[in-house]
Length: 218
Image 1 (cartoon, rainbow, N blue to C red):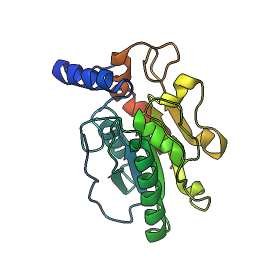
Image 2: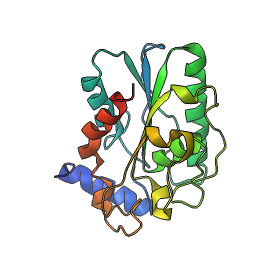
Image 3: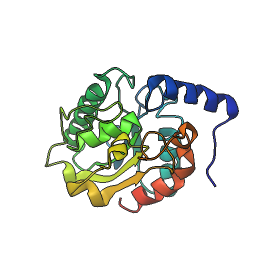
Image 4: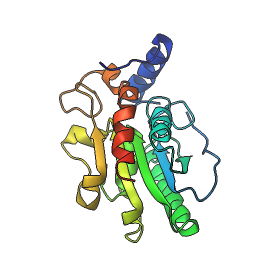
């Protein structure tokens, strides 16, 4: 059974999604944390999504990873980008994510990464892996990719409500086996036949499943 948001939050987020004509969701600040934890969880939130890392996906997924990886030091980072319906928003997120991971990898040679993206944020993550989201809802071209030398340090990729799925595409190549791509049945944003806004808001229910996948690859 999928868990829904409280009524008022659900209505507000649904309105944001419909007005965007795509993904759901306001800027969240980057988390302050020790610079060289064993694992850095990097989250790109959905369009206008509230919350520190993202109310629907980022916050609950990071909390679930913390509970399951209590013997691993963790930091979290919210990708700093507009998360708006502007055509330049996914491009800005793509650049910001790659820059953060590249900087962290240089500063912390042993650090590994879990990349998390929801809705437009999934496009940001995919683009950063070299999978163009151009043509998808709130998508754009690839403008930066995680350097090949850092690729083995990306332990897991978690994407939810990925707009590219609406076009019958997803993450392929070297990251495919490290990726968990969750699209709720009927989701208007990722399911090719989907029409449900509420399905697109349901991914909090998948936080535990996603955390299990990520921790199993650390």
